[in-house]
Length: 69
Image (cartoon, rainbow, N blue to C red; front, side, top):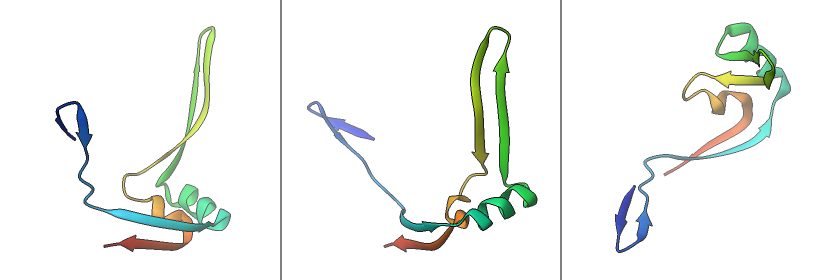
């Protein structure tokens, strides 16, 4: 990010269109270990359950990932 005179500018090196989420691919990601379940419960404070995905693996959960150039 760059800021000039109070205006923020961003440079994107990669843009993807992700269509048709696949629950089967979600389950495969769990089995293969690049999608992890994070139980974030603490004493007297619970942040809930989360899914953590290995970096750059989000397109693997969709039937129609498209990279825009």
